[in-house]
Structure formats: structure tokens, C-alpha cells
Amino acid sequence: MRKLAAGNWKMNGLTPALDELEALSKSHANAGVGVLVCPPATLIAPAKARISDAIALGGQDCHAEASGAHTGDISAQMLKDAGADYVILGHSERREDHGETDEDVRVKAKTALAAGLTVIICVGETLEERDAANTLDIIGGQLAGSIPDNVTGHTLVVAYEPIWAIGTGKIPSLNEIGEVHDFIRSRLERRFGAGVGRSTPLLYGGSVKPGNAAEIFGVSNVDGALVGGASLSAADFGPIIDALAES
Ligand code: PGA
Image (cartoon, rainbow, N blue to C red):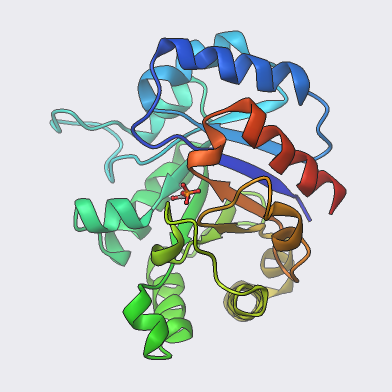
């Protein structure tokens, strides 16, 4: 099982922020687990020039089509060309801000796979859905709709991000995280077979910090994290990577 610590900078980061990435690259070139940073697209190419190959780079979204008349959009091939090996797709902020549906995410994922990127498909419930005991139904529907058929255990990562835990400092109980991750694993095994199902890294995301990372990584079927705010500084992201390596 590949363990992966992934940082999602969202719409944060100007050129000076590359100093943080360079610091992380120096301190964690031999982390013993996969380390991925998804900066804004404008920083992928300059980041690539400044960091060790041990730190992978990713985009935060891509267009569903390979190229064409889509002013302002970024294609999967452009991300790859700039130095990315991964792309986050279906983050709840994309689903909310841009009305992306499961089908949109699935089509984008197919395009990204064709461009040679590994896709990180995000799923997660709202607080209302959790309170109504609908979490597993929602996650099951998102998995079925958002993941294309032609993934392999090397080209798919799934991130479980409860929407109410993102940027709020709140996280589900460890039992709740384990329940969802076990469910995602079983759904992947059922649909893709044991090989892909067992080798797909499952990341937890939502308010992962240095102080809670170790306990989260102790939960069954948690193979890493998708980290927002705490990935912006090497001083916070570094200890999260270390906690994963020790788990
Ligand atoms: P957060 O964001 O770590 O700031 O809660 C996580 C995410 O949205 O990927």
C-alpha cells in the first residue's frame, strides 16, 4: 500500500511561497512515504525547478476536454507538461463553487488519466447528510458516479473529506472515519476487484493538523491525508508527513 501525504494549497501561494516548498523538499526528500503538493497551477512549473523529484506535484482541477476553446481553463496535458503527476478532482469546493457533478468529475478523470496523471477523487458528506445518517449512501453514490471504469491501483487515489470538517478545525470521531474508509475500500474491491481495491490509497482530509495526524493515521484503511491549511507551511506539513511515515 502506497502511503501518501498530499497538500492542497487551494487559491493560496505566490512566488515567495516556493521557499516553503524548497524547505520541505530539503527536509523530506527521504520521507519514506509519498509526498505530494498541489500548489496553484501558476506555481507548478517554477516549483518543479526548485524541488527534489522525491516531492510530487499536482493540479487542483482540470478541464474535461483535452484542449480547445475554453478561455481560462487548464487542461490535464498542461498540468502534466508543467510537471504535475497528479490532479485533485471533485473537491467539494469545486462541486460547490462550480456546480461540478459526479459525471463532470468522472469525465475529467478520464481525460486526466489519458494525459498520464493519477487522479485524486474527492468525496464527502455535508453535516446535514451526516446528521440524517445518509453518509454512506452519499459516499457510495459519489464513488459510483465520479470514478471512471479504467482506473488502476496506481492511477487512482480516493480522498474522503467530510465537507463540514474542511477548514473548520472539526473532525469526525476516529470510529466515524474508520467506518467510511472501510466502506470505501469495500466498494472499490466490489467494483474493481481485490487488486485495484486494495492498492488504492485512501486519504482522509478535513482539518488534519500536526496534533491530530498520528491518531488519524492509526485508523484502519487510512493511507494518508489530503491537507489544506496545514500544508502551506513546511513547519506544519513536515510533522504530518513524519506522522504518516511512523504509522
Ligand atoms: P483543510 O482542507 O485541511 O484546510 O481542512 C482540506 C481540504 O480541503 O483538502
